Image 1 (cartoon, helix red, strand yellow):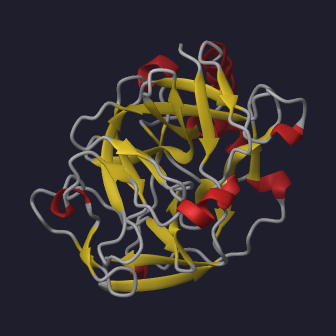
Image 2 (cartoon, rainbow, N blue to C red):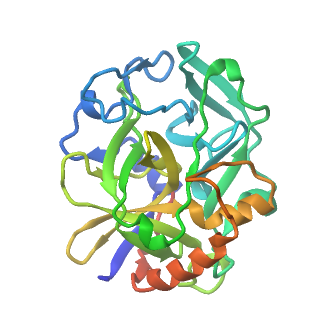
Length: 312
């Protein structure tokens, strides 16, 4: 693989660059916006027949009303996923399809890192994937649907799968979050937290997808971290990642990096975190083996951090 220059989608950059919406090739509001207007206080679902997400349930994706760049995805009635370096605030909002309005939930930002922050499966370094827990489970009357995680037996089976990418819609508008498309290209290991141990020690295990300039292709921007990455699976949305970093190679190709959630399933189960997977049935013990195989493959993609890399 070509050498990459990458940056975490982090807080420092978000303070100056976070106003930018996710970049989608040939963007169209009717095609790519989750809501037709009214976001964030009174969002109106996009019902255009052109909308690429029309046939899917987006209710399980919530946002931080204190920082609209921060999006999270539910994996059960109480647990949700996000990127460690862009932790949401204590209040989360969701659009309730049952009520036709926004509903609010609370949680306590993580202090128990032993349970809720996850380490790289091979190096053991604290990484960029974390779990949050709502103070109370989702109210069934709100009709909010959590997402299963896509668990395939071999990492190569993820390559080439179609993606639906969820990103920040930009400030000043009322349409809200945008959804683009991509394809899984490969695996990579990044050193987002060089102070964990010696520099160049991988602490974050990711999948990556490349903006090929095709209609709908996505380029994450600073502030998109924590947003969910989905694979359409038998008519539903299945989670595979949370946005973590961006990069370019020597030829100017743009890379999007997402924490690869399936790697952590056995660890999540061991910690008592509720979730479901597709396809079923599942054996979570495969997670460590998959991580080892994929880690070896990912070493071919050598990444180096830019000086003063920022986080979202």
